[in-house]
Every structure is written in structure tokens, then in C-alpha cells.
Length: 132
Image (tube, rainbow, N blue to C red):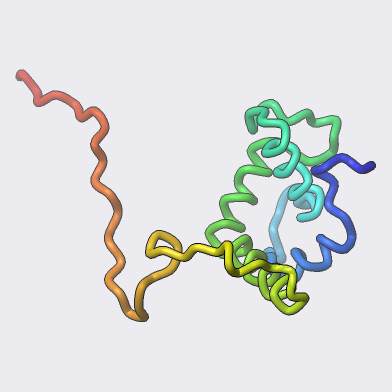
């Protein structure tokens, strides 16, 4: 059995079209292929190790490379689109039991054009006022 962080050809064929195109003409070393980086991301998430502890000998790149690519893909909506694609396929195959589904406003806006709140105000420690 393959390790759970190894991306199969079938899964990769679903994910690859969703990934943003990397700009050409960069200088410096050639970036790692997206598939290797995705496997590094899955390795970190599966094992629970820190990003900086990702073993280089696995060939997944550095933990920082994996983290940056994960951040970029999340910002680009890759995982939301993948979720939609997989749900559509599973629904078409009639393998989802919708009687067990629950939708609330924390996941889906109640109506189109609904107000979206701004960023939450930080409640962390603040520097004390200057005594000078």
C-alpha cells in the first residue's frame, strides 16, 4: 500500500487543472513540480510535523516552499474548487446521503449579496502607552 501522502495519478488528474499557472521567465533555480510540493504538504499534514522539519531527503522541497505553495493555492481557491468538483462527481454517482447533510450560515451565505463582515478586531495584547 502506498503512503497516504503519495498523490495517485487519478487524484493528480483532478487537482492539476485547478492549480494556478506559474508565471514563466523567473530567474534562479527551477521551481519544484507542483505534484512533489503537494506530496510534501500532505506529508506534513498527515504526520503532524512542523513545516521546518520536513525531511529534504524525501524530495518534496523545503517546508517553507510547501507552506508558501499551500498558502498561494488556498488564496487562489484551489481547495474550494476541488471540493466542489468531488462533490459534483459523488452526487452524480448518487453516493452522497444528503439526509445527513447540514448547511448553515457559517458555510453558505444565506442570500446572494448578503453583508460580509470585515476582519475581526484583534483582542490580543497591546503595547502599553508610553510613559515618557
